[in-house]
Structures are given as structure tokens and as C-alpha cells.
Image (cartoon, rainbow, N blue to C red):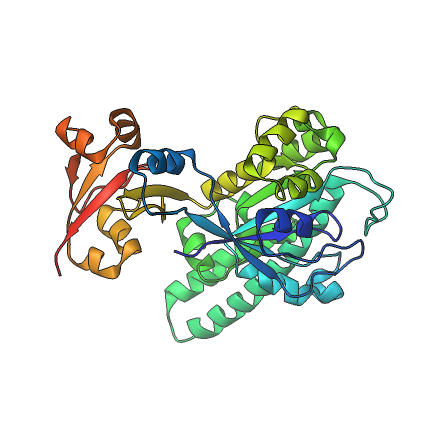
Length: 366
């Protein structure tokens, strides 16, 4: 399944530096606005120690982790919804992603210009948020107009949808993002396929300088962002784009030494990737054999036949059962054979909801 995170923010906040650290695809990072025009796209592996454990136990010929697509979208500016800074094109890029990774500058550096002339993370967040809201107003205005025209045929449900969206337009007009509004079922139904920008989940990535590590949470700017995020149900991670880009160039053994020198136990990017994965509503199940150990991503709440269909549509069509081992049991017992002998391999049918970390073997017939 394909899911993507759009990296957004004002120019010169560290978006492209973050993207370069996340992905082997290199985006241009420069000290001037709009150096990224066309969005850069990179497929990023999801760090998962459980996959490492299965690899150690099974010793397969190949290992394939789960992955998430990250899209580096050019910096937005005030007036983007009116086309400033090529804003309409950039906002269209955001419509295509599933989650917004909003990079917020939380450091001072006179050598790195700020498009607004000063560093103020809450102001910066509001600039981006309002541009997303203004674009959503435009989107929903057009949808309401179309619904009203169609409702003239006598379809009451279309008239009800138009009314439901008009109530949301009132809230947007007050500067409230759609994701912060408790929508009714009718409103949620009316919002389907609109791809409204302020309705997407948001993960704020607070970019601090090296001095802000390892106690990034104590930085005043970060605390201000976290308070704002908590008030509207968003999430926050703290990282240093400069440090992460340096870590990305190191060998594994060098990375650990580098982190220890900085007083860190883990880099910021793995946390960021895992949090984005969680906010996308994704979980992981595994298949494990001598040829391949692989992590498969599915939506939380997916039943066994549909989880099998992620591997191949034939698996779903001809689904018989899923032979299931909980990861903890697999790790404790050390192998599929040992788990089976210990009675820890369960036979699950079509109504089984796959759990995060399940190790699965699908039986099917086509």
C-alpha cells in the first residue's frame, strides 16, 4: 500500500536538509527561498527492531522493511493560497499526501535568513495553517456550489451535504482547521474525496540547533509549539536537521559513537519516522522464511484476508486461514517450529483482525 508524508514549512526552516537525511535521494538545500520547486520524493525504511530480531533468528537470504514515502514540498509563504511564491502549485502537492510533516524552525542563526525577518515558531505555524485553511475554503466553496446545483433535481441528501459543509465553512472562516473540528458523520461523508488540507493529520517537527540537544524538550520554542499542538490534537517531535544530516553519512558503528558524544541514546529521525507511521494509522505484520523476512504495512483494524491481499490479490481471493504467532512468542521461543510445538501458533479465520507484530503464514487456494 502506498502512503506519503508531505514535508512542509516556510522557506529555510530545514525541510530539504531533513529530507536529505531521511532519504538517499538528495534535495537541493540552499540559503534562499524556493530553491525546491518540483517536489522531491524519497522512499524511507521504517526502523523496527522486531525486524532485526526476526532476521537474527531466521537468517534469511533477504530482508525487506516497511517503508513510507516522504515528499519534500517547496516552502510556503504568506499569500500562497493566492498564488504567491508559486503557492497554488505547492498547495496542490500537499493535497496528494496523507500526512503533513510541518517543519518548524526553533533556532536562531544570523547566517540563515528567515523569510519573515525573525524566528517565531508560533507565527510561522499560523502562516502555514491559515494558507491551508484559505485553500480549504476555496475547495469547499466550490463543492457546496456544485452540490446545490445537483440538489435542484430533488435529491435531499445532496442538499443536506451542502448544508453540512456550509457549517464547516463557517468554522474555517473563524480560522479553525478542519482536523480541530468535531465533525458529524454527515460532515465526514461530505468531506470524502475533497482532499482538504487542514483535515490531514499533522506532525510538527521542531528543528533545534546543536545546543538544543539532548534536552530539546526544554527549549522555550519547542515548549510553545507543543502547547499549541496539544490544544488541537497534533503531535510533536524534536530533531536537529544539521546533526541528522551528519549522522546519515556515518557508518553504523560510527553513528553510535557520534550520538554518545552528543549525549543522545537515539537519533531523532527514527522517532520521527515511527511517529509519522503511527499517525498514518499503520501497523506492521511480518512474514518470516529462509528466503525472506519482510515487514508488511496495513491499516489498523485490517482483517486477515485483506492483510493477505497486500502480498497478492490471490491470497485474499483464496484465503483459507492465517497461521499466526505473536512476535513476543516468536522471539521467546526462537523459531516457527518451536512456536508450533509449544502451541503458540494459532489458526485464525476470515474475521481475525491482524495485530501489530503478528508473524503470519497464509494458507490459500485459487
